[in-house]
Figure (cartoon, rainbow, N blue to C red):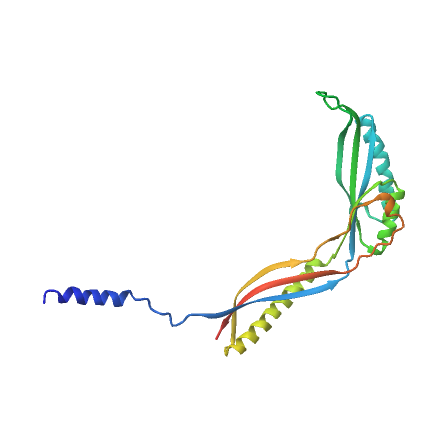
Length: 231
């Protein structure tokens, strides 16, 4: 009889320690909604500049400054506002002699100056004229052209709404197939957005004179992951 109490105590403890199943476990479904929109870019940005070389740094800078005045004047002639033009880079670097004797330090034979500006073209149809004007104005290095949509954030907001609607449509279909009904939204996570500037390859100045440039279309995308409660 002296062993009865410890055995009963063990049984009570085991019953207490058994995990209880929750009666209000939330059933849920998680889906990804997507939306996309093809638009025509309404802005272009061109990056161009002048590279000069002279025996001294001062001479190279002076020649470059003179040439850049022609570039700025050319942009003004085609209607680019001063506020839409900015200096993107200015660099002065030495040019070394390629012939080097053993144990001989490199010898500076000239200096090179590179000055680059970016210009916002608010009418992509005038991009070809702008490129022609830049070359005629003295630009000898075209770094690239990119197209983008000025109303990008406004359009992305529209895509966010459409992506959530797409997620709800998918979730409702899955819930019906599983014999459940769709409840409220528990979480929404934005997975990412697509689109942005579309670059063109870098080209030599002489290759772009009077060349037509087409902006084409840009596809903006949005994806969201939404978790719904199921009833």
